[in-house]
Length: 429
Ligand SMILES: Cc1ncc(COP(=O)(O)O)c(C=O)c1O
Image (tube, rainbow, N blue to C red; front, side, top):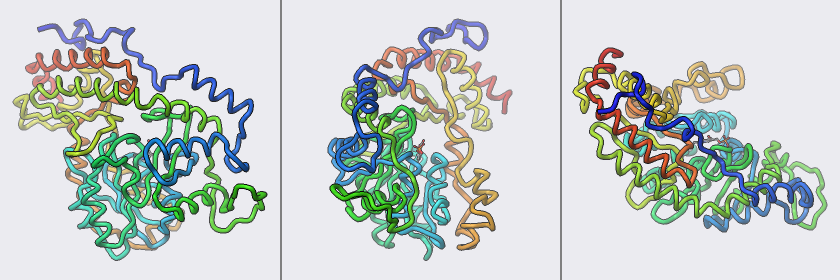
């Protein structure tokens, strides 16, 4: 048994193997950006084709969406989508208790109240039973998040929404390319939102977002919303008239050109990622007490983030707090060169902004609806946060296969020292 790096042994992942580029910037990306600067129209509100409208067309065609509207960020896509769906003051929107903060903030941007529902302990996505429990007369929409790239249980969520007359807005920020029963996520509910933020599976060189829908009216509404409420039509001079509430959430042409170039390589990257991650997870699945991420049947996981849960009982540590085992494993794996980290330190409803209700002043939007129903709970979200760690970004690079094999070696080395893990975790508990 080799000595753990945390105690002076040699780390499994050598220092010069630890850095992995993401995003990959190739000559065609550079050329696309320069071409945009040199010749193309730099704004999305110009008449005729421009890098933004080209990306919208290519994204829609690639994944099979009817309409795509490019905006400044994934958060803007969520907010504009809720506005287009008619969500506003007095409404409640059900969102998962485990997600990135933007999912919970988007309803607040529309003066609606986010109502958090617990997640499934295996997929980490909305638990449909808890969604149903939290529906009230004020509920207007549900935002299922395809967290980490794993499709949410859309069969049940869409069914619940239809029975209760609610809109479904898919937060697919982490899941471009993921499919649910053969259909791309984002296009199954009423609308979907993607993020192109630089760490995402299909990135831009900065910030960006995309709204998709099968509903032409919703698409038009988001198009107006991103552009001060104006209507921009081909062949008609801009008249600067606002036909409804609008923001300035337009996408930058350079960022659109960069993503459009990245999109042409997505299938190759995705194939490599599926192969690399599948091999990696197959090795880790053999380790006792380690639960590898999994997708629902008949879905494809986009593997944006890999989340691993740890079971103290497998280390003979039934009485030990899961957080103690988690922090012990974090320390030992990081020493071996595996950059394990936490993703979300608390359930979303425990974020300060929601606890202190820091909205628009005067207690708004919460002052409109009063106390949202059934605020407590979220045992699954809480347990997942307590006993899991994530691996982010490194595995996105299509050339990461060798690195993932080293990561698997490191996990196996740490597990071979299970007695030491148990001693340290017990001491930390
Ligand atoms: C689940 C989820 N929703 C929404 C967003 C917001 O996207 P953006 O950062 O582009 O605003 C993110 C970004 O990380 C996300 O992970």
